[in-house]
Length: 493
Image 1: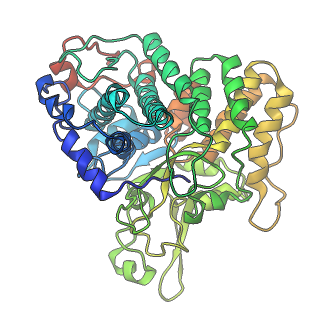
Image 2 (image 1 turned 45 degrees about the vertical axis):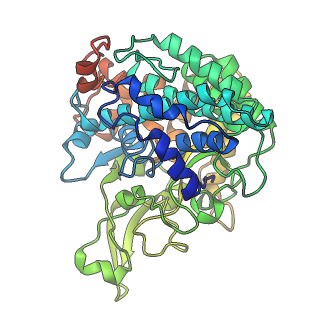
């Protein structure tokens, strides 16, 4: 999987430029005149590189010196809890309980954090896109950096429009304090414009000099997902096939290899967010949320430190796998062995991001968060082709993912059989189930259920008594943002 490294010197320089940006909860309160400090910063090619690196940094947990970042926790946790995928086991997180039970409203703090962090990153992208053209530097590098910033802005807006619908569309360095709201169609038009420009990015980078940076394949893969969400099946199929035809990506033969630290920057990673560096200075603390919370008396015996079990899979999800599906044993932790060798069976917890061989203590990980994997492209292509009534191709590509689920690291098991002779409706159900099993805790599930209109039917199967309604196909606009900006509407909450 891909990660990126930003030198402390460059990061310090970027901080000087962005410290004047609004705080996590004050995005719309900032006086635009405060941005004057940025004017004196964007002068050299190194400034341009650092400016784009700053956008990447806002995706992870290092962006603000706090525990926040676009992909640090709230975003993918919300996508799992507000679905049939995850339950909240954190004893002091009522906002997460609300997401899991679909009782959330405009005051939900997790949604406010998602909104604030996305717009902070969008602001930095806008500044880079506006300032970099004026820097005297080599044109190819300038264009590449601009297209990286456009890719990231497109990704950020894609997250936001799917979650909140009509929102402000900010594309300039300085915007009104109370910006107007754009329609989803207008926002998607900007996303497609940004990602289409980003298709000019390199296929890859010189080894060691571009880890985690956006590529042509990432732009095309994200465009495929945008078109799939828009039900533009022709363009979704076209872009997914373009990614496949790049011959830059493959599935790891063994599902277990996807999440090994040795697989970072590997053949299945299309775009990932890095939370660790070679020195382990940045801990991917989400892994701590997934690992089982052991009894204090067992921590030293097990050799696991600071293990947590804050977001846990639904039993319905766990039981949806074939018994010998390789993904089941890789994804879930169901037992531990204490110092004396006694085995304790426990309810399933998520363990797939934990490479035990490389990081045996489990108190954090240098693993990456996968935003786009090649398996996602294969399943998107199958879905688009199914909707275009090409069932033969849909069967071929979903079965590529199924085949991998049969391999146990040594041989192919007699389980997870290929799908054959499915109708269009049956293939729809198969794809949404396959995505559930393939992408556990990767931030896809609410988006998949919302995109396919299956929230009301699938969530109650996993969470008896929890019944989403039509309003839950969008999240509420945070009330604090509406208090600051009277132009913001409210979704049906």
